[in-house]
Image (tube, rainbow over all chains, first blue to last red; front, top):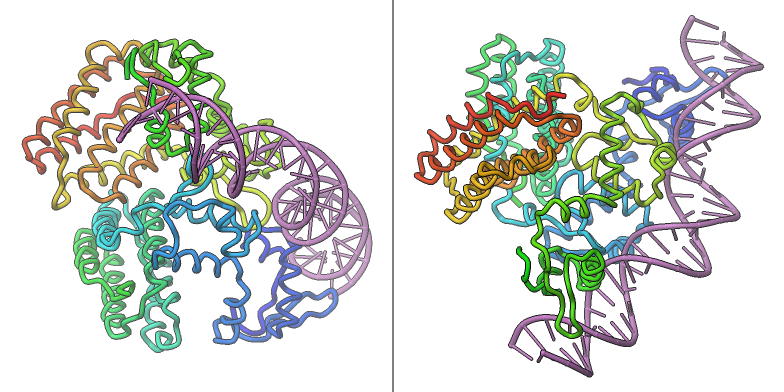
Length: 268
Length: 268
DNA sequence: AATTGTTCTTTTATACAATAATATACAATT
DNA sequence: AATTGTATATTATTGTATAAAAGAACAATT
């Protein structure tokens, strides 16, 4: 979206899977923060283009849930948390209400690195803590991603290819310098998940998402290797070319090689 | 375990990841139900061999959580539930307390067939409802399972092989007739998960478990093909032989073929 | 030394009222 | 016709008191 676009309540509500009520509050908040302007009976209009640093940091701030998630991840990886924890402990430690904590635990449970014990408490999976975790994720991806491309009926719409290509090129053109490690990581995941989606089999995409959310844990304490990044993106673009021409076997081989030369994200 | 075995509280507690308190209650319940006998200061002793029909059905009964899980699964597959549901609706419909419902939803969310909406309510994944779901699970397994066997360093302990072989042979020898569809399904899943575990990479096992819990949904409305079952188990035994001799490439090929000839479980 | 019995503490569940957040329906405006 | 404004209903969260379940420590028994 860009400055000047109208912000239509129902459209936003549908896109975000909520009703108009919270959208309305959001629009008012945007106006208060200076990102939109509203007139009576005529709705709101975006005043600043999003994606600017200011907009991003305004959004990133004040996100309690994301903060406590990051805190738990950091504490776990730094071995400041025992493998078994009770909800009461966590509520005290991170100053969360029961509901907030439940949502946090639910999220982590879905991502697969914590599970409920039969009695009181939860246990973090060894998976994440083991030093081999990163290599195991890599091995898993090396199986899943090329296999997805080799599925009979694999197809990636030209609109998807165009969108992916544009984004990669934009990043290469200069946005890279402005991006945070988290954003770089995020775009990388989305790229690969989108490729996997072409198999038309949600189980490939979901298993990939799952390991990606584990990888993100490590990314929380990582740096970005901006040079390797350029080579990485160049490989993405090449992959898109080959996929576009329908040479799937070649694309799968390319993907295999691509995954063997990992970025230094998550290297701590 | 068999009749006459002592039931040692701490051992049971450790095995089940709870403290002695609930174990103690369980033992008293077993005694009340006639499965164990206890003497003061000397603990409890098993009186009947488990695995008998009576023991099994006694356990299966009265499991509220399992029942509501099955009810939701059935209602969903029969299209008696809308894709979007609120917690309040579900609490009323299945007569569950908030906590009971939360546990149920958490479980389903981890299995991957429901997800929280950003506002009020939850949405069932299309994944499960689509008619292609079963074929997609099969395609996914056909990738994951042979790939697991082909992982460098794949190894299946001889103790594991022996245990798996014994169980398969016992089933073939006669237990098959006594087993419920659910049990047949369960043993099948455990066999395959155990094979995948040999790769030493938990992501293979977990992704397999995930799709297996989706398959189980369909199993709730399925019949068992006892004849196909014999062929199926024979293939399992053959696979174990090849794995034992370390011919992993051959084993992977065997697994691929095995997965191409599915049992009629889940055929509705 | 291992195990059971007992007591005490902590944690979680339940119930219920109050409040906040979200959804829904429909009138008003463009 | 599409969109916004507004009122109302429904849903979920919070807070608090109480009960139940589970965990932990230690004495008693085998």
